[in-house]
Image 1: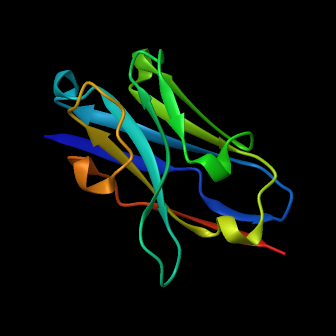
Image 2 (image 1 turned 30 degrees about the horizontal axis):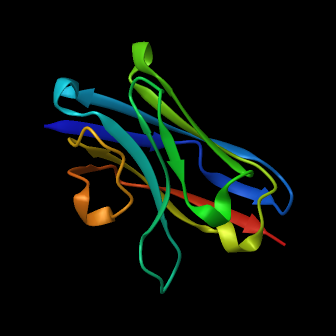
Length: 124
């Protein structure tokens, strides 16, 4: 089993920035990819970004490239999501997820473990 705990969410004004953290624990040897997803009220959970633990590969939702950056600190078992130039459409619950696949995948159904989520609210 792998446990994921997100932190760093909160209320921010439009144009501002936030950095989310996801601390992982448990059987980390079985996990190769960590990802971020988000779910806005009344919408499906969507892919945001993902990274291999080694940090050698990453992927982003096309619409978020340039504003969001994912990074990993293998020694701390932590993955980060830096979010800049936030707008009201970024308001959502952000979830950290772990995948046992060697390859980065963007479908939420492929991820094996999930955190509880952290709320991000952007005020306009």
